[in-house]
Length: 112
Image (tube, rainbow, N blue to C red; front, side, top):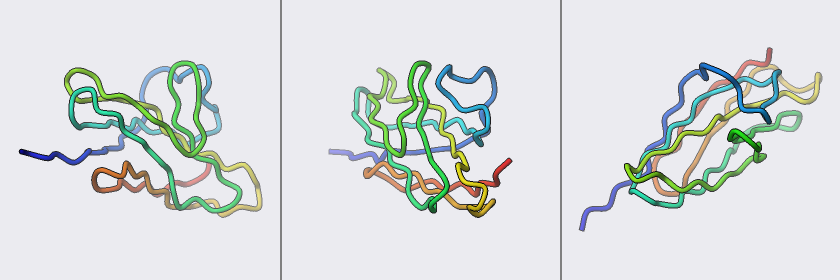
C-alpha cells in the first residue's frame, strides 16, 4: 500500500478575484494535490491579532479553515488571502497553511 501525503503549493493569484474576496487582501493561489476524491481540511496558523486568513471560492470565503474535496485527478485550487484588519498590527507576518496530511506551506506576507 502506498500512502501519499497532501502537497500544498502557493503562487501569486492571477486573474479575476472570487466575488467574496477582499480587494485589500494579499492573495495567493493555493494548489492542493493528493488522492482523487480525498477530503482535505486546510487550516491557516500563525497570524497575530489584527490579521485574518481566508480560503475563498467563487461564492464564499471561509475564515482560517476550509475543507475541500479533491477532483478525479487528485487536485484542487482555492484562493488564499491574508488581510490586515487593524492598522496597529504588524505590517509583515508569516502565515502557515497546514493540511494535517503532509508538510505545511509558509508565506511571508506584507500588508498593502
